[in-house]
Length: 455
Image 1: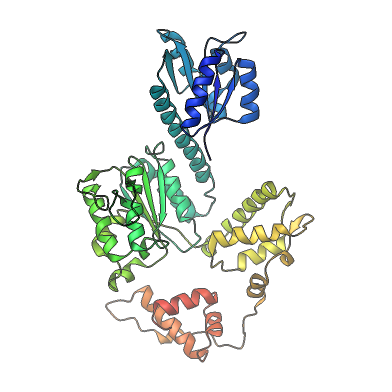
Image 2 (image 1 turned 60 degrees about the vertical axis):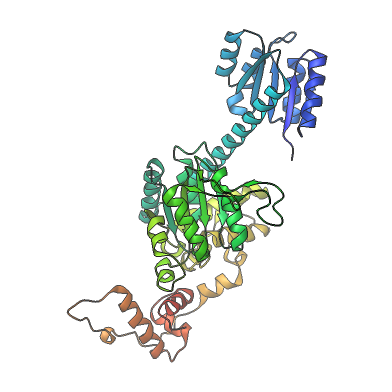
């Protein structure tokens, strides 16, 4: 969608000239011959940028700026002043104008200033959105307070690499955006890419860019994310799925802070913070030869571990209420909250999809015609079944006699392994019964079985 520019000038020739030129440049243009008409169009058309002449009949451009409250509206303003009137330009900047141009001006100059102003406006908008994301990190449990504290410390630091680990749906990208928006890089771009969503050749092109003619479809040169994010942040989601050969190229970028576009012959220097995220066990991936050890140690200069939702206790209800308020606004509903019975269901359910699943569950519930509160009957059968599943009281508890602690000691991992095997043995291989013996959700039990090579 084209940017919309409003030109306010009482000289018909200037309005016509700017309109014709800017339309050729690909912008949508509306014009006004007075400040009053301009104010009306600002409210009706919501332009992205305002080209404002100061010498206007009845109300000057500066007086219009004072009325507009530019910082609050977020509109970009370029002031047009008579040659040599520096005082007017300075006052315009204090009132929130982005830049000024003196008459007479040339069209190339004004095109350049407009492009820079729109880029700056886009970044400001992005920063505002990112700061909204920071506020959305909801949690009052000790583990989440520690995560928030860590985010604040990392944001203020010069650490160039951060590794966020956690299950799918725990909010890894939200944390990455919080680190970026709280840092000195906040006014620069935040560029995100999912490493699992693209094949190797396309991923390399997206990250590093390519030169014209580098391959069959390269009809023009293209900047990659590292180049576009210079001074800002690149977020590499699902880094555990990155091809091993691409990992080597990424390591070079991190070590040398430079790269070459595909088909390029010169090194391009960049200053970016790289934040990576994964839901995989990278230690295991390294042992299996799927992930480079040198890259792993380079990425996890500052690690952040996000806890699964099932371990966050009362945060589950905080998030559920937050999403209820969110969908009340979005769906024009007036649901007052969540019933005590539904809260008990939420607290007992293991949330394998974490925060993302909880948000989807609330959204689904809000589709129903709810009078006052979300009730258990508004939840999906899968959630209710897990909540209602009774423990088999006839099963004998697992005895710790199955464990022997040697003088050299034993790791928690080995203890878990032994208990999982013993529970399976006592349950005759029935995974549901075995998970009940350990008072563990079946999905969590199966994850441990997979980790210990039992499935």
